[in-house]
Length: 225
Image (cartoon, rainbow, N blue to C red):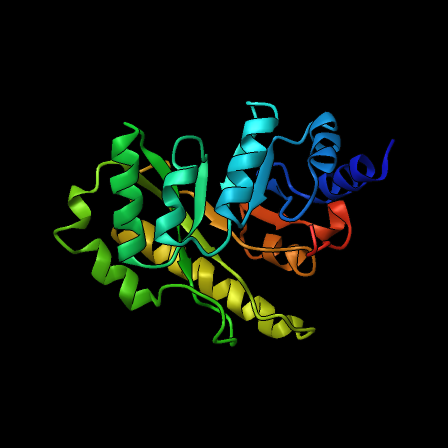
């Protein structure tokens, strides 16, 4: 078994059945993605729209592509025809543009609301109050080509596991409140995307349904590719 396949197998053994593994393949060559594919992996995460578009064109069409990075509105059109889920909806303006582009493709695109839960100001995301303002707005009810399926967040990059756990717990609380107040009758609102290579065990304990893991599968990233 090659190292990528072995890494995937090792991670899957540690994940509960209800938690799905998103293999973060950003900056990785297509050969590495194919190795993961041959090991049975079908969910892949990218954070650059053009890179994801190019990989989609060259790789097997049963791959489900998840966009996990900060999405610029002028790049949405490149991924809308095929993207399975956009994790990083961090503003009402962005969701409106995803809806507009999806309408052109006659698609309904699954999306997650990204919340800012970390101490680092550099991370993107809604505050809870901002998300509520969008959900109660008249405009939101008219966006027929997006489907909100849950929430996403990134914890602080720190060795302080107590802080990380607190941040993940905050995201779970946001999910529960949104589910109760806005999506109680919608079965598809069920995803909590949290946890990466360094903190996914804590995320799973706090209720994650999708973990986004890159370096533990593919090794350190080469930013020069």
